[in-house]
Length: 98
Image (cartoon, rainbow, N blue to C red):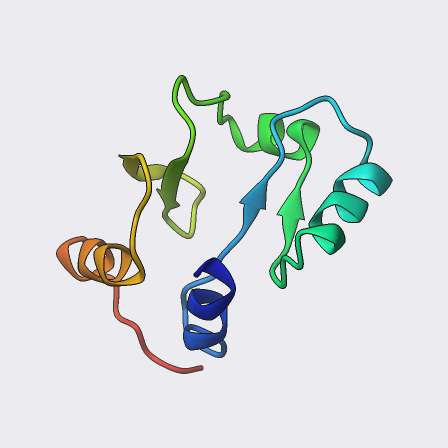
């Protein structure tokens, strides 16, 4: 579903990014992403620390960040594509193409 969402928002002002909160090195993170057929960027724990995010208490957790990397929403549990789209609309995110 996240691959589909990534494709749907391609060329817009919204990006889908995965996070590996494990201590895996970058190469291993990319290998895991390839095995899982993840088609969007995946960040390592170190990259996420640089953004100021801490690991969530519950998985899955979805963060929605502003262009300045501020957390504007934290969604706990599985989300559907429609729920994510609705949340972006609630936040007033314009889903425009570049």
